[in-house]
Image (cartoon, rainbow, N blue to C red; front, side, top):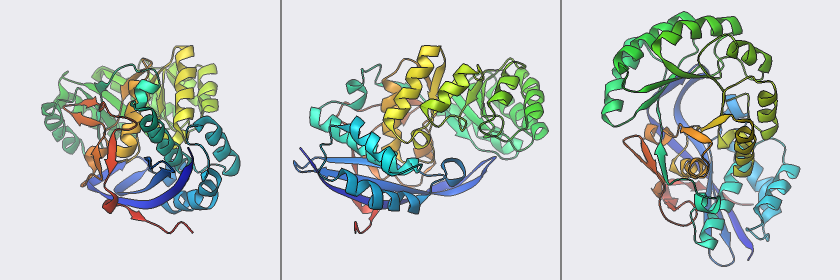
Length: 364
């Protein structure tokens, strides 16, 4: 069995409303889709959701990276040799995690289809359903609080609340959200690197009275010493996000005892293999993981959901991005209803791509 063709396309998806975090505001997802075809007629799909401020890549760099560097490398390869192909991708293209995850995701989709099993079953199979939280972006306190009841009525029992603009104002935001929640759901905070070290300590201490479950990436990425400083001075668990891209990054924060949890995102890790390595390292060290997302369609979200379903150490999920989008380019795949994410009992990712939603480009 050989890879016959690799097709790449632009997938532009408008959000239902602007989504604001400490790093900026997003109104549209500019993603990339990869379609890999074998000489036996199998099709596998993958998606990249680049975010330049976080991952350093962007839509055009992902497209060109695949067409110029990755596609020529894998044409003619056996798609079942994913580990070897993944190593080849790393050697030919530095960085650009979006290009690599899109290709590797499509290969894993193919693998499941070839062997007739969902990915999470191929990976050992933990469970085919789990709860996901839903994210509330930064806004005025009363606007954020008004979003609570509709989400709880839909069945969500964990809310991820964005903060990080200003510590004192963030306390007001969480006070309003906590009052609206009234103990009916977990409250997770994500500062997206927005606070300074001392500001983070003081702000988190102020927020402890609101029974916050965890605080994610409170300070600028890479400051492992700062994360450890914060963790040792607050009672709320600290989770790394942007500080951990790779298994090597995970090892650093684990050795430094800098965090209580790690948020794995496929678009940071640059591959499902790397993401699973991060989880394995964390599990060995007794550090639980969350799997999160960028602004992804249900294509990449389904791949992430299979990762969650394959590991008992992944105890939390933040896979809400498809709910932010005006249109859905996917048929089948993972579905989230009432906060419960359920995987289909179909081979690979268990989905079909609406090809008319993708602007495929010349492979030349």
